[in-house]
Image (tube, rainbow, N blue to C red; front, side):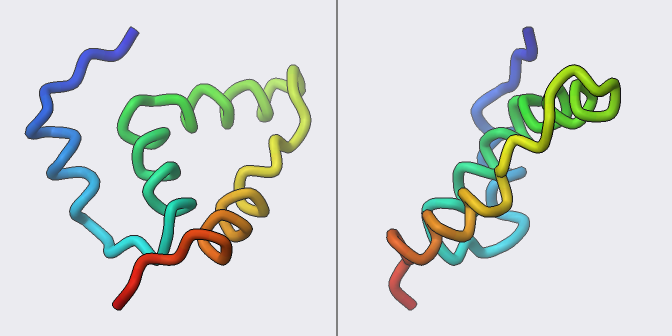
Length: 67
């Protein structure tokens, strides 16, 4: 399990401006290590493509952040 301090997570999330909810979810999965785990499982052939990029784009379109 990965333990992160709150300030580390906030610092990580501020690196790039999010267009919508999908970008924010991607930042959280990157900060918690879930995306690294998914990539490793894909590389080993244990799971297929999870569809994260498509899901991120759909969420960004459905729940965009106002400018």
